[in-house]
Length: 240
Length: 284
Image: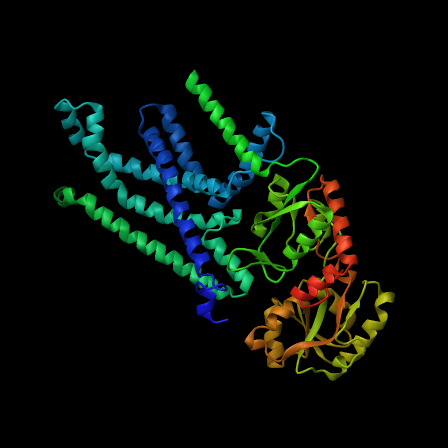
């Protein structure tokens, strides 16, 4: 079979399957980034809080999820999660095995890891906002809500964006580890295609190329976004 | 309080909906079977996403015999045994060889395949081996010296003074070492493709390996000219063979599948599918 046929969109071609897998990788990473944004924001708030307990909890979270191998966390959620769910099910009288869908496991596991990195990004972004501006806002009588909306958040987004771009790339590559759960994302599909056709080199090269396409495209998206939120800061940037 | 009650209710519905899909009755009307879907020709995925290969076709046949609805799911080999223990699947089918170490943690069915190993050479040499009685056929050996004597003695004559290539650390290494060390030169290789290279280059006369490995090696353009020679060797000399894996607690399920596999072995289904996919008769 020729390479064109093998990678094409015909009946014997893997084209459609690979593109669907690419889409799955993107959707999974977006879901993980969203989960991570929620946890990241909460943990960042905890780490910046005045309460000592909250600060310790926040530190524990980032230490834990940045310090444990991603694969271990995925196994923990995939196998451990099902065991816990089954036990809870039995407690409420359900019978048999209760599974956690691989996509949910993937989004949660990668999301929690991504959250630990995002927390640091948000924390440093909040710290980067100059104290003088916050004090000035207070001095002219802004309420806390207005202060967040008009002073803090716009600047935090701007300061955090380059860091979020890095976390996105990290999560994109972490998503390949979800292949162990059998979810048909790009890594797993490349493996399956390679093993089913014995064309290992071809399919791993194609898989690698598709990851590169994803990362370079998302790089451009983040560059654009940075330029856009940076527009009103150019003056500030020069003074920094 | 009303809000809390509603929340609890919706969580409960969610849990039941999740459980409904995979929960099963204890009388085994349906089981979930994990396979890799990427181990051609045992199990493979077709470009459209459907499963094909020796094992998916065999299990469809077996499940119909024992009237169990089988749902095949694909799973990486890495997480397979852990998934079985956690209850994610009930049966594993992934060309798993029965070994004493694995038998400590999982239960195995009656083996449904046991692949023969075979000698391969370039250009049908040495002629003595190619012309040996039984050449081209499968001979069953048990590992018992008295039982295997006729075949081994004939091979010893045919291989006298030749160089045999073999992969290190496999069941085949031991067999070749024990039987031919004193009459032939044995060269060990780390991986199977390495003995192919030396075979093509003429550095060794024959190489000995799993026949399903050979079937796929023959399709590579650089291995043109390589072919089976002499008899194929099968039987319990290589261990029990490939079997389905179960949790040790599911004895009733194992018994049902044993029944189905024995029936499929008896009426020639296994032989037919094995010739179709593995290109050799791998009946244990």
